[in-house]
Length: 239
Image 1 (cartoon, one colour):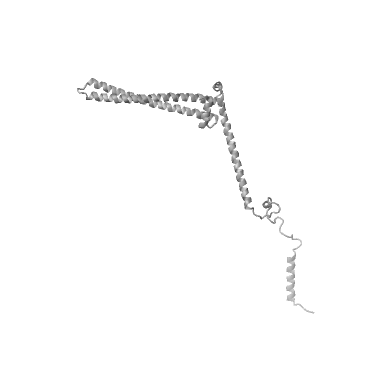
Image 2: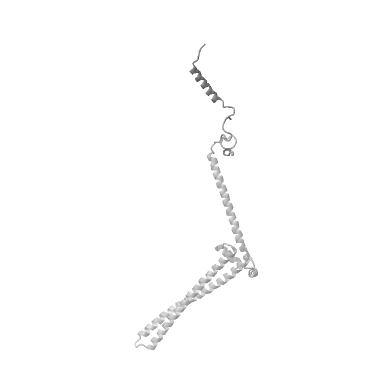
């Protein structure tokens, strides 16, 4: 019978105990990771991945380009839709001006707060402003003709005065008359120049009244009046 030394027997027993500890945990210790720890990628990362495609598979470049193209196409569709909506809005706004087809009687008796009433005011204001523009334009043309004549008369009066003053023997009465004629010519020129300035200011005010009538119509009807819209509107109103 062989005897194993005590020191060796103690070492072997310790090794066997360690192996048993790693082979199986105690019955009261659960196996694996805690229940609240999930294995693998989160479900949100794989919810849209088709069956049979690995969760870690990369999106092909062509597919990514298709997504961007789809987004761009949707943006174009939205832009076209917004453009069409703007055109519809503009057409509806312009449609208010169809009230210009109303008869002169309807325009004359329309409420000032209605579109027809606003058009009535625009028509009368435009007619008045145009009449003033025509009148002042004619007067200004006459003013300019008068000033041209005044300048000729002034030149002649200055020449007559010079002749009277240089005459020998000098005639005092002739000199006085020539001097009076020169003064009168100067005064007439100044008067006609003042009248021209006043009539030019009146013409500017008449033109401003025409613009004010258009502004008033645009404001009261909440309509943008471009040059083409005004032209069309004036034709409808017989202006």
